[in-house]
Each structure stands twice: as C-alpha cells, then as structure tokens.
Image 1 (tube, rainbow, N blue to C red):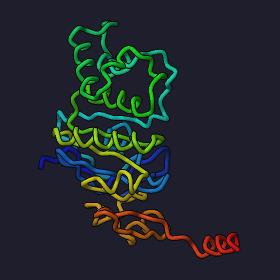
Image 2 (image 1 turned 60 degrees about the vertical axis):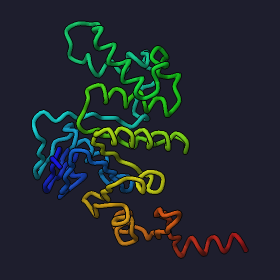
Image 3 (image 1 turned 90 degrees about the vertical axis):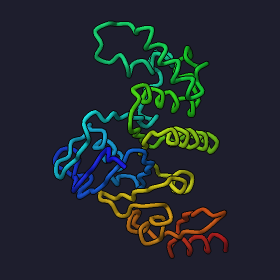
Image 4 (image 1 turned 135 degrees about the horizontal axis):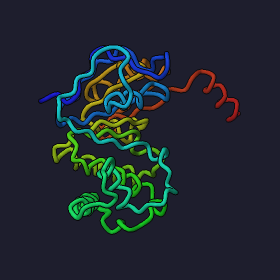
Length: 258
C-alpha cells in the first residue's frame, strides 16, 4: 500500500512542553485506524500533527504531495447556535478563501450530492441547532467529504451520542472505508468502537502498541496505556475490556453490602 503519512520519532506539543514524543507511525492508503488512550494521552494532538495544524517539534513527518485530508472535529467544540443551515455549513468548507461571496451552481450540486450520500439530503435547509447528535456528526462528515479527501481524520466521532447513533456512525464509516477512503479516528470507546476496527494504536504520549485488536487489546498493553490493570474477556467472538477493581474498591463494596 502507498503510505499517505509517515511519522518517525515525532514529538509535538504546545508552548515549551511536549504532549507526544518519539511517535513512529505509518498510515497507508485505505487504512482504517483507531487511536486509543486515556484523557491527556495526546490523541487529539497526534491527530492535529497528522492534519498539519500542530507542527512537529522533533522527528520527521512525510506526506506525499497532493494528498488531500479531511477533518471532523469533536461536536462539542462546535458553536451550534451559529446562524447557518446544514447546506450553508457544509458549503463553508468549499468557499473558504474565495473572492466571490456566493456559491456556484456546481458547488451547490456537490453539496446536495454529499448530503444525499450521507442520508441527510432532506435536512439541507434546516438550521444546524435543530439536529440530533447523529445528524450533527453527519453534517461535519459532509464538510470533510466535500473536498474528496484521501484520508479522513475524526476526533472522537461517537462522543456524547447514544448506542444506536454510535452504531450508525460506525456503519457509515465502514461504508466509506469500503469505498476506498482511508480513516483515522480517536476514541475512548474500547468496546463499542475500537474492538471493531481493523487496526489500533494505543497511545500514552508515545505509542505503546499497534496492530489488530487481538494483538493490542491485551492486559499488558492496556495496563501500560491506561496505568491500571484491565481484563480482556471473549464474548461472541469479540474482545471485551473490563476494569479490574482495586483492593480499596473491593473493600468499599464489601462494606456497603455489609
């Protein structure tokens, strides 16, 4: 496979501090990769390094010329009261930097096409604040897809949504990947999202482990990543990660039951 992004010994952060350090990672064309780790482990920073919005302070990042990237931020970071419709919100990604203040007929047709592709064509004229969590996520997927990227980067795409919406988003991303789109996403959800992905990267400031779920969702890698013991069970052919309660928690539960 043709590498889209290659990181060798990359460190990056904000100000004088490094959030990630010594990261080696290769993203190939057509990859589907999940980046997992605890809060503060550098997942979002790594995603921004891949995007190019946060520069590497050390190491090397290589991206072939002409590689197109799409980015979907966390929905919690969006101002949903901003007065735009769904179609206008999506169109903003295409008209940025244009001299003309209006969209062309072709651009409007492209927006309609990508909204239909994501199953929200009927919402084009609706205000973005009137959307459900799953619909909001699809709007920003549409914004990213409008540029026809080679690689789609998503920051916690299922954060704050219910189980049904999480399933719908994962299914949609699977369809996009089957169509040839490379995808990298960050997630806290080990069982609902990470266990279903072809490839995982466990990150805690540095890469702790990388590979298929059965290779990295193991107690030793998870404990090194999250700093606490975890057990991995098999259920229906899938790996299920569960916390191992500490001795203090066990004593507390015994006291409560008593």
